[in-house]
Image 1 (cartoon, rainbow, N blue to C red):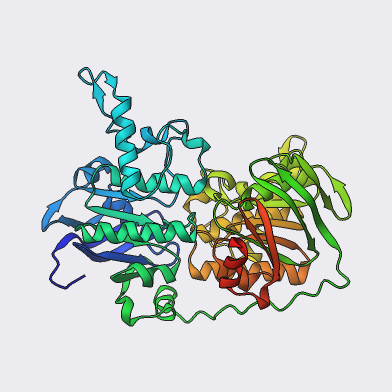
Image 2: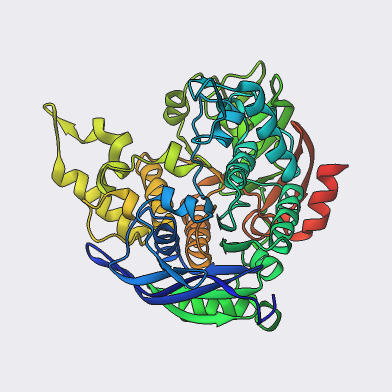
Length: 501
């Protein structure tokens, strides 16, 4: 990106205040034609607020927006779309019961007979053309609810491309993508950039930022604190600007010795058609067992089956030496298992309920006396874990949707710890949260394991994260268990080689 490239979008002196929070304070940022401009910062730094203002979801209290040096007013997402601005949001925003082609062309569906009858043939062709443009094939007639999370993420990208945007905002676009799919996305972005398109790119995966960005803006506490050049900065410098201090590098977990420790979970030849086959492993007391594999490897399907969300076709699960049948999640919870799902906002939280309600919902029976909830005891239990996990919230009555991603994840952890669980199943527990919050969650897990003997089954697409936090690692690929390694002896390259062997 050359310095002579014209500015295609400019935000000047933007302020935004929410009750109790100054989300943005005098932020100015420019996007050049043919540029990938990364915006980084901790959860709550103001990144999403800034992007939501650009696409018209919310309005700034003060400040101006210029498109091609002309001031514009973006009062809603339709205004943004007309100006050629599109977004690929972090949270999936699709209509699950409609088809792929209907989602891609939503609001732009071709019609026949004066707009009264949909032209299904043309719709299918246009959807296929958009998918071809980004180098992916998904059946245009497939129902979105039947797609994998990765396919839905690709569909989200296709929809942003469908109306011919000149400016695209990518918010954590690779969180559900495999390495190969991520490489393909970067090719798409580079082609888009070369054709004159411009990109705002948000990601907590800072290595990606250094690879894809032409310029980096750092936000902290609603303020712009730095503008960096990828070729002359480092991960350490980015983190220092984001956090406002040096963050210590997390060391690898010390080798785990299973001697004298009981097996808390034993899986034998567990099989579920079209998802995974003959999976066998043991999880020891006080151990963190990593589970890795490319998208589509069957990791999530496996842990859902162990937790009772689905039922296996064959094989057995033993907890604490006793064969157990988890036909529902309630069965698993009674056996002191807990599951934190990958999509926390969709499957793990009750967004409009308060922090205290989200934390205590599984133990309400224990807190109920004579048909009434003991509010004093409920508050006491919640306050104990807010302090224990350092959950940052203005109050217990705050809606959980208003917390940062890291604090939302801590609320879900607190919920399960309140049940007295002994086996924690964590599916992408640090997805979409910043580097500081990630380090805090890692520390919480290590303390739970070391001090309380809790056992953890840990899934992550970030191989380096699993290598740092896990004791042992199981590698899966396309539903098969391909191998098992000690984390302190393995490398990312070795894990990939095992998966693909």
